[in-house]
Image (cartoon, rainbow, N blue to C red):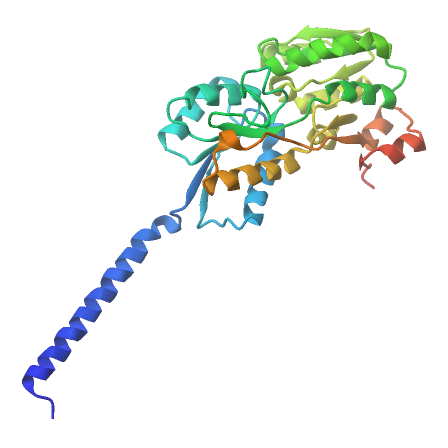
Length: 333
């Protein structure tokens, strides 16, 4: 029979065990507050056509094993160009682990605003991060920034447009003069245009209102449209699709997403795949890698063609051209 002293010892030990279990449970609950105590990635985007980048990025992170318990994404959709700096600052103030910056203007602002905090920045897509001062070199970007470039394929894209629509001569080039990507592209295209037998017709569109005004009053003497790597001009892509079909104008978009939306053709990257590629960089940074030591990667360019749009504007495609097109968007049956 157990003595009174032994009974007291057993009770005491039991009480200690219960208290220990309670403490462990509380710690576990605190550690899982909100169901998420992991990483936070903030995303700033100023172009609706780039939402597939975000979708691809999240899918890529999931493929790397990140779940809702491991990572939180702060993204409420595209913001206006006037609001993007404030959106970036809010992410910095929230001490996010990484900022995913979409487009060149957002990335330039992100570099400036994170200069003191050193918050890692991964950009996608940027056309030319060196000439715009975002990084010093692609192999060793330096600082707190790395990312994915869309590749400098604009000259090839112009050649592809002419191959798809060989009769074009005067090509409208709307562009935002305050954005380095389309202005640098214009300079490069003007060098090769004479050799290709075409003339570029550049029109400055520094704001949404001027882009819409141009769409509503296209010059009568153009026979094609070239949309540069310009988030402002590209933000009205549904209107460009509508007017290009209405006027039967062959049009080149700056990404596969434009062609999927109804633009005739492109030789450029897939926003969705570029987003997945960016996940590879973010995964390394969350694992402790220095972003400035991670080489900038190039998104794979793809030749694409929307056959439904070709039919709508009365453009016949040769079989040889169709065979060399990597992505064909066919008419819905």
